[in-house]
Image (cartoon, rainbow, N blue to C red; front, side):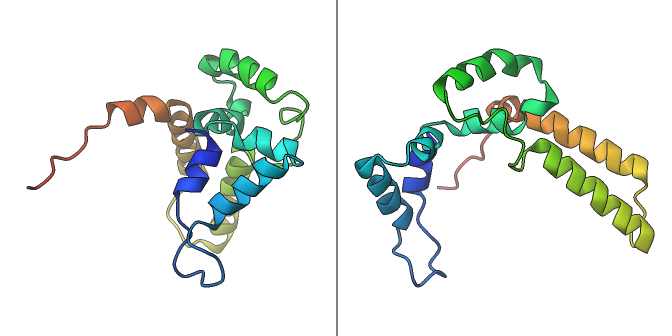
Length: 144
């Protein structure tokens, strides 16, 4: 699904009393109607899968190469691939490494640096293969 559809369908939490239940939908409809925020519209037109591929692109996953070329053509002018200011997979990995060093200094865990590196490897593997994992997933039988 495209991000605009995902955001339009998900209601805002009832804990937020200041916003209407489907505030995202109203904002997105206004963005498209006005047509001024072309870069935002280009991002909203991307699918979840395409955004996830952008998120993990620095892992250099072979299966993403062709998709990255298609995405690059789709978002021409955004310079999303050149921009390193957004939080991608490397940001997450660095955050885990910093946290592991902080925890090691405080000695609050029995995980070693090797354990954290193994965790990072597993996370990278899951990032690259989430779609295969999701497609293999077997749903529960409903209780009727």
